[in-house]
Length: 150
Length: 70
Image (cartoon, rainbow over all chains, first blue to last red; front, side, top):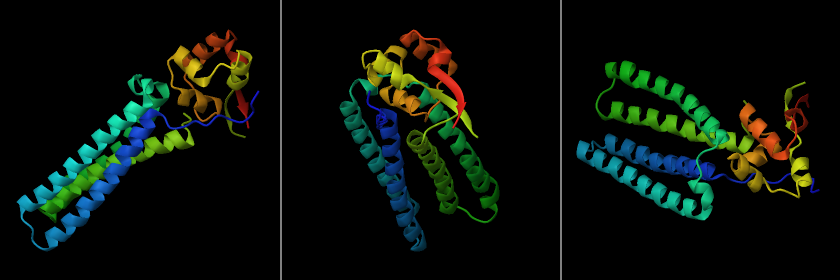
């Protein structure tokens, strides 16, 4: 009997989580970098919306195309329903992200309106959503890699 | 000493004509990666999954899984 442990490898859902995490980090790093400079130079709402739309569109296309490619390479595994480990890891990710989103939304909705306005609040809200999603996908990939022990 | 669920799945697969992780996973509705995670004790299965695994090998639950310290 081979005593060496077999490699766990990347599950289909883990690959999708990695893809979503990386796409989100890259896309929104670019957006916030551009938006920050544009706001300082007094960019119009239309220009900022165009920038946000372009980043969202690019992210969507990359994630959809790459997901299809991963699904085709994964074969039957991609069509199989999530098993109990996949579901447990997804729940853990959502629970971690919920608290981040709650704190972010309290800051944006209850604190910032007294000191900021316009795009500062919109971008802060977007940052809270993006941070929560990054925490969710980060928790998911960490749980797949390091193990998930209830 | 931290206690956790350990298992004999690798040995039992070997005794079952080198059943693959994918075959075992297919029989109980899990992915190969989840079986690998259970074997390497990176994931503790639910009670139902533990019973399903024991059923595949036709062994009582306590022969497949143990609650032990490391």
